Each structure stands twice: as structure tokens, then as C-alpha cells.
Picture 1 (cartoon, rainbow, N blue to C red):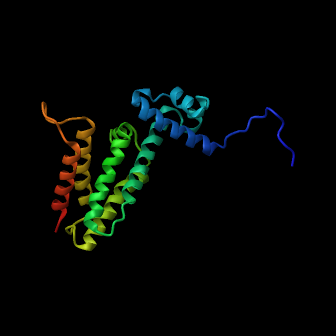
Picture 2: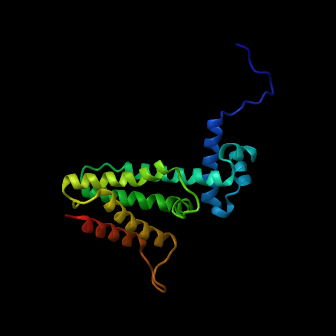
Length: 197
């Protein structure tokens, strides 16, 4: 087998470049916020030419769509990873996983629900679907009341999303210290009571 001549560049496979760019975009977003998310910043962080962002994502808009889609995939995986056999604990732990994801990637989390870019619908749907499966599991165990599982999913999501959004925006009552972790746990307890039979 002939060896490569010295000085010959090795070309990175296209799928790898896309992955590198997406990982770089997540880092840029975490470190510099949405305003810092530029084609040049992402290309520099990935060590590729700016044209690579256009080739793989059709520019910044496509990159943002891919980021939001990746965010929903990560959220789905975080919630789906909760597999405790106790249905009450499973619902609580799913809520904890949801908040942990939002606190770990607050800028991405805000982008996901901002409506400024549309994720791939099957990925976004599957994120809520992982919560719906937990609702169904609780209904089968008798710890969650009967009803359309997706309707209950939306009600649970509205509660956790509201609590997390308030925390991310530091929107506590003026002049008071807000203990978000305690409030969130109380919110999860409220949800558990609200969906009980």
C-alpha cells in the first residue's frame, strides 16, 4: 500500500465536519450567547473555513435550526434516561432532568422555545413524547389519573417550563431572595398532586 506524500492534507469526512461545526456552535453559544453565534466564530471554533458553515448548514439560519433540533434531541434523551420503576419517582426525576438540561444550556434552552427557528418536527415531538411515555407509565401504575396522556403532558410541561423560565430570567418577586431549587421541587410536588387519581 502506497503511503501519502509528505505535506498532503487529509480531508475530514463531511459528516465529521458537520458534527464538529455543531459541537463548536454549542460551545460558542454557551460561552458568548446568541449574539456571539456568528458564522465566523463557529468556523474558527471548529477550525474550518467559514464556507463550511454555508456548505453544511446553508448559513446561520440553518445552523440555528440544527442547534435547536440538537437541543430537543438532548432534552428527549435526558428525560427518556429516567427509568425508575416507581412511577411517582420517575415523574419527579424527569422534572429534575428537565431543569438540569435547561440550567446546563440556558441560551440553547431559550432558543428552543423562542419560535425564531423551527426544529425538525419529529425530534421536537419526540422530546415531549418521552414525557408522554412517563405519563402513560404512571397511568398504568395507577399513580396518574386517567385522561388523554398528551393533554396531561402539556399541562406538566407548562408547569416545569414556566418554573425553569422564571429561574433562568431571575424573575423572582422584587426585593426578595428566591430559592429556585426549593421552588422547583415544590412545583414538582404540586404537579404530582395535580395529576394524581
